[in-house]
Length: 458
Image 1 (cartoon, one colour):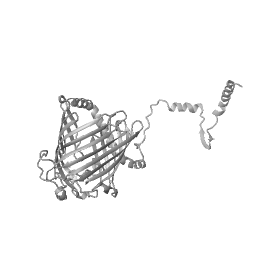
Image 2 (spheres, one colour):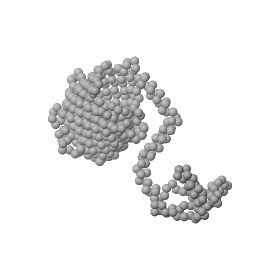
Image 3 (cartoon, helix red, strand yellow):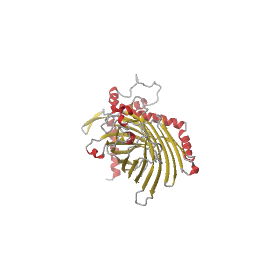
Image 4 (tube, one colour):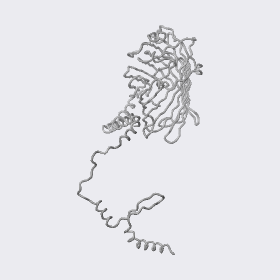
C-alpha cells in the first residue's frame, strides 16, 4: 500500500468518527501517570467563546484595590540585597542623571574642544597629584611652544593648603630642576609597626631643592627590554615643624625627641636603573617592570648649600627596589598583577634616627591602603601587593587587591615580624586607551577608607 493510500484512509476514518466524538463529555485521560482533561466542545460552545472575545461596550473590569508589586514576605526577603546594593544603586542613579545633564548641555564636546586646544598653546590643566589627605586640587603648567618644550613650569595646590612648585629646563639628556613643596598636615604615630593611633601627632614639612639630572634611554632592539638610566645631584633644604592640623597633637608635644624646627641641608646624589616591558590597553596587562636605585644624603659644601644649616644633618644612604609583573587572559583583559617594594636606609653613624620626613613610611597610597596615610614609620620597609583587574562593562573595570608588609628598624627584623595586611576594591571608569580615575574602598583591622582619584591611575 502506498503512502497516499494510507493518508486517504486516515482522513476518511477521522471524518466518520467526528459525529461520535462531538457527543462525548469531557473525559480525563491518563498520560504518563498524570490525569489531564481533553475538552471536546461542540459548535455552540465555540460560537459562545467567539462572542465573549469580540468587541463590547461593557465597562472594563478593574481590581477593587491597588495590587502591590510584591507580597510583604517577598519584600522582607529582598531587603538584605537592597541594603547591600544601595551604594551601587545611588551611584548608578547619580551617573545616569549626570550623564543626561552633560548631554543636554553639550558639555563633553565643548570640553573636548577646549582641552584639545590648551596643550597646543603650552597650557596644562589637570587634577593635582599631591598624595593622600591633601584635599581637592589642581595642577597648572606652562610650556612655551616656541621653546620646543625646553622650559616647563607648574604649580599644584589643594583645598588643604598643600602646594608644589616645579620649574624645569632641559636639553637632550640633561635637565636642571627647581622644586618647592609645602605639606602642612602630615601625621606621625611613632616608630615601628607597633605604634598606636592614640599617639597621633601632626607635623609640617617645607622642602626646597635644586637638581641637575641626566637621563638616557637605551633604544630597545627587537626582543630586548628597554632600559633607562638616570643620575642626579643637587642640594636640598628641609624644615620639619609642628603641623597645622586642628585638634591633633603637635609633633613637638607628642614626640619631642624627633621634633624639628631646625633647617637641615643635604647634598643629594644618586643613580637608578629601570627596565620596563609592560604593555596593553586600556590598562597595562602583560609584561613587567623593575627599578633599582641608590641615593646618598651627605653634608653640602658651603658653595652648594641653599641656606646656612644651623644643625648638622644625619648623613645616610637610601637603597630602593621596585618590581611588578602581570599576566592576562581573554580579549578584554582580565589581569593578575604582582608588585613589591623594598626600602633600606643606613645612617653613616650607627644608632642615628633620620628626620621624620625622611623615614620610610607605609599607609595610604604608599602601601597598605587600608591604613591611614603615614600610619607606619621606620628606617626600612617591605611591602607586596596582588591585584585582579577585570571588566564590568564597556567603560568600567573593577580592581580587587590585597597587600601585606611592614616597616622595620632593619630588614633583618622582617623575618620575625607579623606583616600588616590590607584589602580593597576599586571601580575604575575607562576609555579604550586608559583608565580615567578610580573610586576606592580599602579596609584593614584599624580602619575603612574611601577615596577617589582623577587621572594618574596607572
